[in-house]
Length: 418
Ligand code: HEM
Image 1: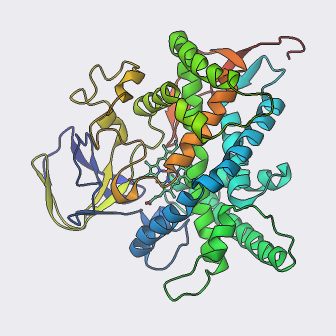
Image 2: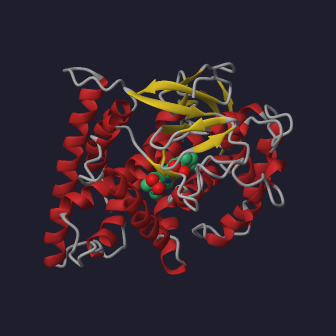
């Protein structure tokens, strides 16, 4: 391939040669394994931070399948109310500590704190601030290292990321060991968290999983679950500040749910099914500002794309943003319009914030709850305006408001505001 266009170009990402595909235009081949055209692939530099197994391709596919099965168990009717319980407790604690009685808050770090507390509780039953803090800082370093230049010299982001990965793996192995001891002594939490499911999993030979395998699965899920949801929450808050009409509609929908409850009632599954407009708003936020800019695939046979031949073995990176901004599928793509998601919504493979096909994000449904529960509590308590209306957006590689999105809160009860 020696031609370049706006749709396809070759570049060097993270030290490896990769073809970038822009504008998927409803093309299914990248997401489908039906014709064995493409499989997920990670650059070696990223893989080094997730010590799954020696065979990287097989492990990625298998890991995803197993994780999908486990995460789906969180949302079966008998178990999902536990998720609501934890989510509401964590939101209320976070708002009480960091939002109530404040006039000005910076959204992104607080949203990161919320999603971190949530995954520590949902996945490991850790709810003490010190235990959460111990995981938070190295997670941040690991994330910074994942998308840095793979130069392993002291002090570089990559080297710090590798160190953080080692620290987290050791820490998680200790947590797994402690849980086993607690189980033997009948002191373990009785709730079903991710760790308790993983302790029951067996490998292909029927053996219980090794502690380091469990630790690396938890680490992968933490990375997937932490920042993407926090990014969506942050940009939803931003759009709601900028679009008062949209804020009013969301608030109306949420207040109807709130008014249908008696004090002390928890949110439940049926409530979230009624949050249709609010979810359409979140979907539109993810169309305009997808938290994940795309992921990697590897061509496993030769194929053609937009008149270009992509040979077997080439590494590919598909792009979310350019697909979401294609005016063939989204008229006036820059306009904020939640109605795009009414009825059948966008055509298949044109709206891909969670990816697609067999590797569709396994945490998609959990993320929806995480975001809606947070939104419910925030819009039924506060109104807000942005401090920096034209705040720049940076990409690291998640989109981030350059100053973390400072906002001014208006409380129902304005006494004692800092
Ligand atoms: C709004 C929040 C989220 C967004 C936008 C998001 C987006 C994505 C995307 C684009 C992918 C790649 C899919 C592909 O390659 O086709 C992905 C994969 C993944 N996500 Fe999420 N995600 C979110 C939340 C979560 C949560 C809450 C979890 C865990 C509970 C999670 C766990 C994962 C995992 C484990 C993978 C790898 C799947 C695989 O390789 O097959 N994500 N996510």
